[in-house]
Amino acid sequence: MIQGLEVCEYLGATQMVIHSPYITWDYHNLDNFAGRKAYQNVLDNTHATMDAAVKRAEDLGVTMVVENIMDKDPDIRRILVEDFHSPAMAVSIDTGHAHYAYGSTGAPPVDYFVRRAGNTLQHIHLQDADGYADRHWTIGEGNIMWHAVFRALGELSSNPRLILELRHKSGIPPSVEWLRARNLAR
Image (cartoon, rainbow, N blue to C red; front, side):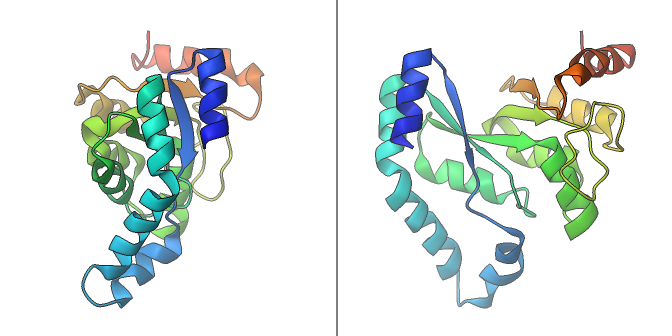
């Protein structure tokens, strides 16, 4: 993490994407333990791993945005971020990862991930998908409910960065045009 932050410092970057410590297994198993002990263990272990990096990020003015990878619970990363009590921690959503979780593991749809992140959301990887795999398709090729996603984004004041993260860079102009044609982007 520190090495990544040094790269941010060198480049003048203000955000660094890091991956969530949570997986689908956690969703189904953390409640197997008495009280909230298992949840607290994840928080404690994440602090033990990241406290020095979070402090360094604060000093550099970099925000580490925690991206959903195999998360099924749309609240759990927001809770993790809030537990740091630091402006250097925020939530990131990858729309394809959230849609995979929706289609394949029974998670809520992407717009719920946006709403549940609330104003801790500061970064989004936009990609389209079919709910079966992490496709990184051009926007409009999959079946993400984009109007619902952008309605949810419109409710926020955090103004998250929207980054097209597509398998092929040739998909960038068609994605932008698809979003513009539907009045979702300008």
